[in-house]
Length: 135
Image (cartoon, rainbow, N blue to C red; front, side, top):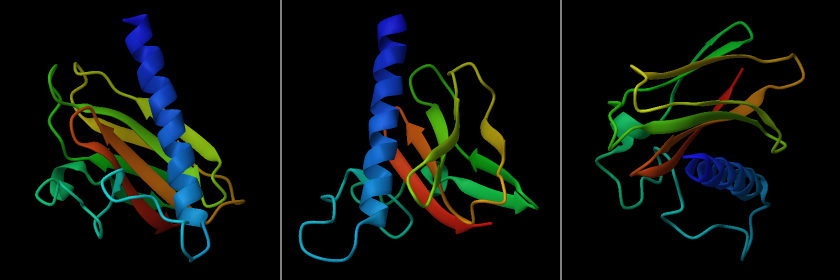
């Protein structure tokens, strides 16, 4: 179980890094990742029918950010992790879930230093989903 957790942790950290570098890259040839690596509302890739249950829902109240993924949680199919990433690529916070959790919901406090953010939601079957928002 420890090896699996380490694998998931390293995979998510790598994905967050790829996500931020992709999102911050200047327009131009060679700066975009291929399709079907990171998914969003605008680019659901091979999962067009999955956006509603995999795209992170973000609620902002003051400097409090709530991320929820409206997705079932079972041993075979569940949301593994939420990550909050700043525009500059800094991972501000993250929460790991387990199949036994009732729902995938996380709450983060964000300092005044940040305004443009990215919420990620990682499903063990349907990959990494990202939503851009401002606070």
